[in-house]
Amino acid sequence: MANRTDYFFKQRVTEAELDLAFELLEQADRDLAADIGVLGIVSGAAPAPHTPVADLTIDLTAPARAYDRLGQRIFYGTDQNVDCSVDHTGIPTEVAQAGHERWLGVFLRFDRLLSDPRTDGNSQQVFFRRDESFQLLVRQAAEGPAGAAPLVPLVQDELLVCDLRRTAGQTQIQVADIDTTRRQAFVFADAQTIAVLIGGWSLLQPAAGTVQAALDAVDAELGAHFSASGRRHGAQDIDCSPPGWLSGTNLQAALDELVGGLSSTQGGSPGGSRVGADAALGTPHALPAGNVDGQLSQLLGWLNAHVGASSGAHAASAIAYPGGPDWRGGRTNPATSAGAQLSKIISDLSAVDANDDGAERIGAQGASGAPLALPAGSVREQLNLLLGQVNRAGLLDEANSWSHPQTFAGSPGVRYPDPGAAKRLLLEVPSSNVPLRIYFDGADLWITVNAEWDGAQWKATNSSKPRTAMRLADKNVEFLLQGTSANTWSTWEKGVSLTLGGNSVEFVSTGATGIRQRAYTGAEGYHTGWSSIGGSWNYPLRFASPPSSVTFLQTSKWPASWSTGPFLWQHDETGGTWFGTPGNGSPGNAWFTAKVTAY
Image (cartoon, rainbow, N blue to C red; front, side):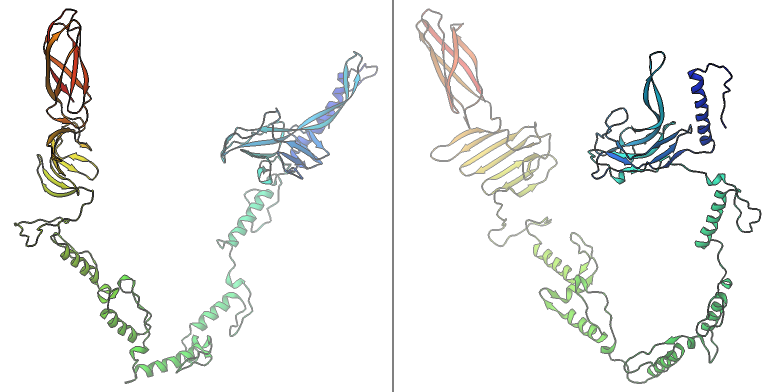
């Protein structure tokens, strides 16, 4: 029923009063739907990818009927196509980051379709028809990592048709992207609200007197029965047709009779006599078809005759050998009889072939010792190791300890392998202070103090002491020094080389920084006004290349104040020349003496 209005005689009815009557009737319909629980999509509005070519829209089937929470009826009569590339506000729904996803929700909402416009008494336009209609809205949730993106929340006055998943770069919505798990479909009545009468039931005892509770009780009973955890049939309650020699007509009786008969030890009717046995062919004996008891009796007779025989024992070749473990080194034992295996053992252990001998088949435990020991392995491996150790004893490329003076009978007494271009250590005298080492690299002999070659560079043994070396080369003797500034180096810091080649003998300064040398120079003469005088000098040692720094330290000069100079004129690795202008405009005697420092 609906709320009513009572129009009276000669009442001037207003627009609002007329509208109220219709609204009351309409509200009664909605209240009825809400009261009986009519909520959700009754039929239609089934989502599917767009056809014939899938895109970013989905199709909803028609006709569609639904009721919202206010009891308002929602209906459309033709199939609908919903654009899911943007939401209901026009914002794109695309996913920006790879590996992320976004959930969309397609919602159905009640609406009215206004039509038939007319002009009222106030010259205002009104719509005479206000038909029930609908709206389809797409809402989007926040983007998130795949599998963790949030769903769109449900809306109070709308019905969720389906959820849609969008991924990065997606151009089509497929069936796998449509999820109807949360679809707000119409349920006429919940089973837990429908009552049942359980007073006369003898087996089911539901927790409540409802259809849902009764179904739950049935499911529990069936689950217990099918899983054999409860409600199992007793064997005596299962009928059976007795086969063979059984006479019981239910499963319990038949099983009891079967077990009793098979386990019987009664003479004349043992259990074995009830089990059939097929014929078994063989040589020299064969078993005819019969039962297990008869065949066992026959086998026992043959076995007793064989065991009690005083002759006719099996030959070794007649005793099967299924094969045991292989020899060491993967050597197999393929013999199939005891006799063949014994013969093969003898031949295998007697083998003396280069790649196949008996010693490699025999294992040997490890033997400890000092300075040498033998690891566990085969006799062949230990013999080879011993031979190598004996052959190598006393070689110069092995670590040896000689506790007595050595006498070399041959010539040469000590022979080293050719080192090539690498430095080979010939002698080392250890010392915690400054050890001595002698190297040879195929061209030069190096005698070093506190310096060691590690294969790529020199390094100091004692970092607090200087490093020195003497290099003997072809027509050249070089004395080298490395200060304490670096513990590793490729080029020695300072050196002096004595060159003996050709017809000359000279000392040359070498090394990364070279040796600082001093020389003396001077000149005396008569100048006429602004004329120049000059001099020269020679270094005590020849530099390997012209020095990069040449400086003058005057010791005396006249006049006391020279007008210009002295200036470096020319210089090379042996010495140099200078010039200067001593005069001040007046003729006279002049001289200049200085110390020259170069490096």
